[in-house]
Image 1 (cartoon, helix red, strand yellow):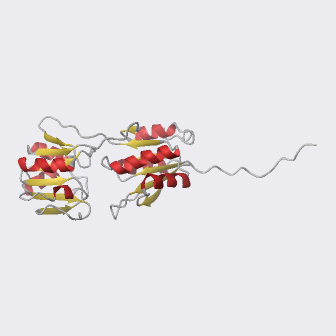
Image 2 (cartoon, rainbow, N blue to C red; image 1 turned 90 degrees about the horizontal axis):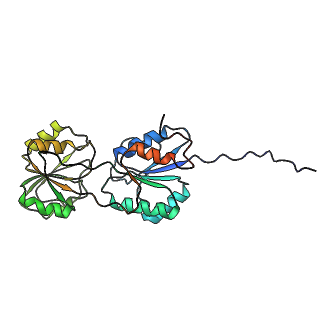
Image 3 (cartoon, one colour; image 1 turned 30 degrees about the horizontal axis):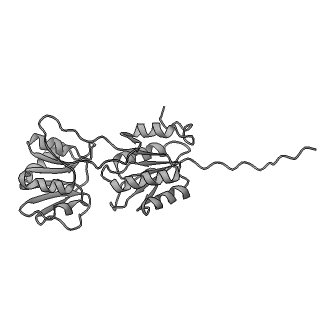
Length: 270
């Protein structure tokens, strides 16, 4: 006598889940691309340093995970199928935590890093390995400094007296600041014309920037070139050894398309 077959339906598999560590233009583009694909769950995690971030496609979480162990626990609890680190090129700790958490959980991971800037004809660049080294170069290069290293890195310049600083950030920086500092609150992108006018209006004679890459903040470099100003460029921190690094959103989608849970979803587009 044959055994009766069960009519209970097989429960559907949960949607493939991609976690994006965000905060950059590329992260926003990737989230929008993934969220537009049928059958993909995308979550973007923001550090929470900006109080009014722009709208993001998909789910959004804010705040830290509690180190690599906390991130690993989240990946397991939320059944993440892939992790994309699309944070700022100088978010060294977050990137290291992402690599460790991915290895601990066996989660496929890719690091999205836009290419850095390259000096060209007419540029007068002075590379620095750190903010502290950049600060040490300034007294010999100028007295009026346009400091664009982000509001969290100003403490490295706080000991410099005798220099006038103009710094720009989306939100007010927290002390310590250099003793003679003017803060400009603004959000990019900034045109070359805007940056040239700023440098002239404030009589800037040296620019300090991190090698963030991208077009949104590159106008200041073109402006400095036009005005023949020296530029102190802080080099990026090294990436973790063995990390899978790509330079743009299509390359991330190509990586995701190879994964077993995602390969049939057409992530690379038509």
